[in-house]
Each structure stands twice: as C-alpha cells, then as structure tokens.
Image 1 (cartoon, rainbow, N blue to C red):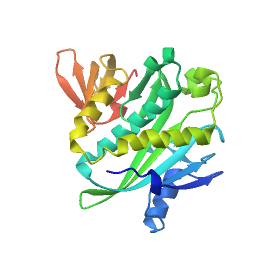
Image 2: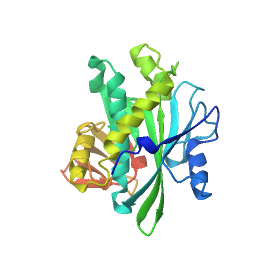
Image 3: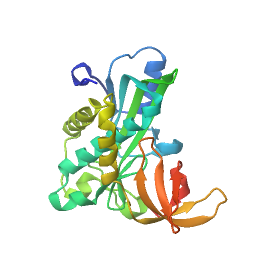
Image 4: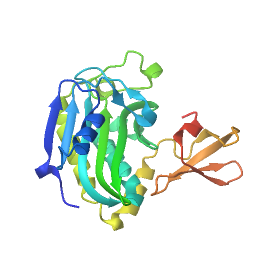
Length: 255
C-alpha cells in the first residue's frame, strides 16, 4: 500500500465532542472519501476502549483520529492495531532519553505504557462490508505536555512529566503521521505480517511476567503472558504449562 501523506487532509478544531464520532459521521454522510486527520485541542466526550471516556487537559496532548479509506480483508483487522501501536511506540521512543527507552511498552490490546503508567491510548473503529474493511478510524490520545499531579492514582504520565520538557503539539502530531505512514505502506504486504507481529511481541507489556486471569467460572488463577497472535488473541500460560487464549482484556488484572 502506498503512502497516504500526499493526499492527507487536515481538520482541526478547538473543541469537539469526539474526533472518532466526528469522523464516523462524515463518512456515514458521504462527506469524506480521502485520508483525513481530525484533531482537536479538547474533547468533551473523548472515547476510549470499551466505551470508557478519555479525559485530557485542553491543548496539552495529541487528540486525533486518522480516517483512512482502505481495502483490507476483515480477517487482518488486528494488523491495523499492530501498526498503530508500533507507530505510537516509535513516536515516544524517539522523544525519550536513552536511559528511559527500555521502560516503554505496548499493553495489549491498545495502550502505550511507560513503566506502569499509561502514556498513550488507541481506539480503532472500522466500517466494513462483505468481509472487507473500507474505512479505518484510528484514534490516538498521546500524553505530551499534560502534567498529572497524582500520576499513580490516575495511572497516567506524559512526555513532559518524564523528560521535564515542553513540546510543540503540531510538530509532534506531524512526526506521528510519518511514524504511522512507515508502517501503513506495509499493510497489504502479507509477507511483512510475521515481522510486525514479532516486533509487537518484543515490546509487549508484562511479557513473561505473572498476572491474574479470571476464568469463565469466575475462578482467578495466576498466568504468565507469552505472546499476541496475528489475530489479536493474547496467549497466557498457567501453572501447569497449559496455554490459554484470552479474548477480553477485562479478564486480566494485576497489570
């Protein structure tokens, strides 16, 4: 798949209910058919995974949704999550000081963590028809200049908080676009998928560490995170060395 940057359009707002909702409404009303980045200084009803609200201080962070017209079999949908996560990982790694880079990880299925604190979140929605993805709505909330007074309680941090510096949001957003584009060009090349999955697993949060898994019978057991498959399924291992497939992150705790 070729680069989308040359045809990319930009829509920026001081305030929106949600960049995700705005982008989906444009597509559903046939008002958008080209790659478009929708960004805002403040989201009144920012969306996170599982319908959770996403709160951020005005003009302090990257709050955006990239709307991409694509043609991709729906069975490969998690690859979109992988390239988005890796682009966010590369973005933060570029800004972090050398002695901080090793603390940066991708938390399955859709968060970026520094140590045990969230520094970025991803929300992806798809418009599909006949088992084909026609539009991807790639939402990213990246913590840049916001300083969290109670970071541990809020489970959040930012580049400014880690590096003790301030960054130009527009310049940072442009850099993220280039990070994402470097992966987007590989999206339709099936030969690159194993490499992308391998890279995702190399930076996987809590890999080979114990966490708690709640089974369907509500029994809690200790398991170890092993890997994420190309389909997006998380594989964990119990004390008897049995491999378990995890489809829902809400069944995991202690992480």
